Length: 434
Figure 1 (cartoon, rainbow, N blue to C red):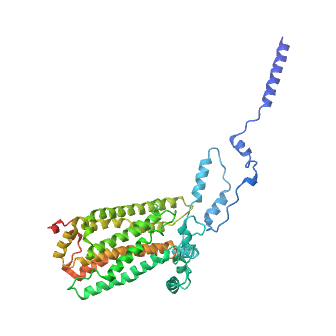
Figure 2: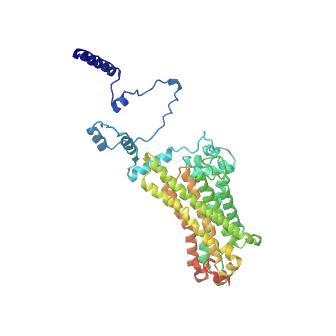
Figure 3: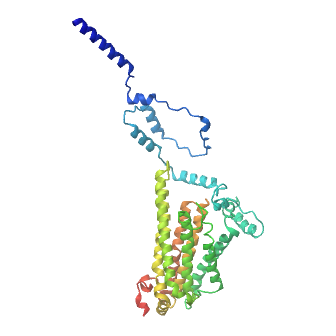
């Protein structure tokens, strides 16, 4: 009996051992992962071609950090450390440029010198035209030679005198408006100071030609303001919106202000002053929102970059965008007097301050010149001809243009004018309406 039980136990043990030998040994999760092949069998002919190599800025690790990493040696990865490894890699891949002011200036100059304007293979027609210098003869060659005189290297002519500007209407009208308009503005203040007994002339053939040239310059920028698509006034193209609404729209608005105070404004347009004001209010608000969205997108894009833009440069860009946006809303307080005060309000103002039309007109045309000058500087920066700091300086100059002009009128005419808004704006001084 015992022998039979012993034989039965031996048989069962052998059976159990046989079954156990058929099961593969259990491996750890790390061993199974390590045993997995790194590459599967694929047909290399089906793989896409390697992208072409492009020159790039090499950023080396700090010597101290590299030495410390070498001293520690290879890290031992435990179970569950995969997420920490990826997070550490992402953090290590972010590089913040740490350079001196001289190094930064040298880098910016090198980038500007090496910049290629336009793209011959772009789907956007305007980007292709920006890269095509106009080599035609005749009057175009004569005017283009002036740019060579200013810059013998030919860089300015090559980047500005292109086929993107149809018949160079934008360049010629802008040169007339700014390079004749700004000297006239200075001249008008000098002549006013020499004889304060008569008001300044706010109309005439030359001043009318200035307003027309400014309008042509503003409108001719619209077809050129295409950066991401061939569609005109594409609301999704924020950079184009900055040029069309911030440049064309606001310059035209200020030309309208100057025209209204010039004495040549036609009576048949006065019933439309309110809807015209509402249109300009929409332009001002839309421009402010557009620049603010662009600024936020710049900050967000910088957070995603591997090599981050220095904080100082981002602060300068924030100042640039907000000087180009939020102060525009103050124009609405001034323009409020036009539709809601009208000709009766202006007559009451001039009855109390006889020379008041002069600072009003100066404010309008100087503002238009300031906007045109600012957008010209933006164009130069887009063509890599000026730096961000230079663009910011020009914007500040354009921003102060109307304020300095009105202040000079106040100093010139004294009690014959007022430059205090609560005293003459219809928004505050309803008493002037009788």
